[in-house]
Length: 196
Figure 1 (tube, one colour):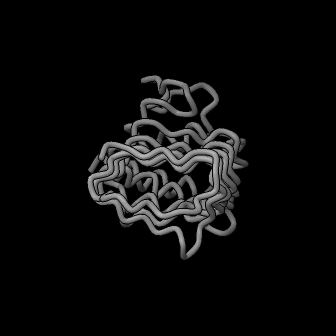
Figure 2: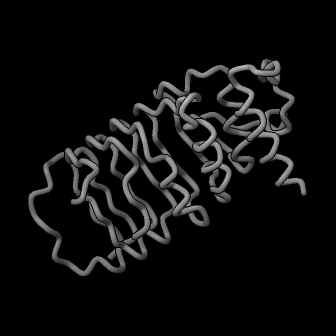
Figure 3: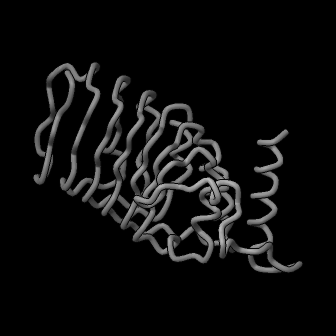
């Protein structure tokens, strides 16, 4: 089975077909919510579209070992970014645009999100626009630094100068005790680990 499209309706029936070979599933605009009922066990699924639902967190992905493309845009997602690490070896495209991700520095969410992003070794495209965190000064630089294989970020190609960190307007390291000090320490440790 190549794909199933379940669009713009509330899921009221179960799919009774053999879905073990399913490669694409689109359940966009179905009022889905993260909870005990959202458990996906699709061992061959490569593309999942859960956009336009009512998800408040990235759903559990441990039942999707071959997931490559994940569409979660236009939900209400504010947490569980770290769940993406479950698909670290396969995930190449993630769209979480127009959600509620803020990655609060004071709660360690930013460092945790950057660490999770750095583990997504095959990630080539990320869409984060429309989230509160996307308005953070220097965020593009932080994301490219954490995920050096990114080719497109928020619909724009990543340039070689950005990849090398020679971007005009790239944030300078904060002064001792500055609010972004922990972020810079994490980024420098990530870079040192990659070059070592």
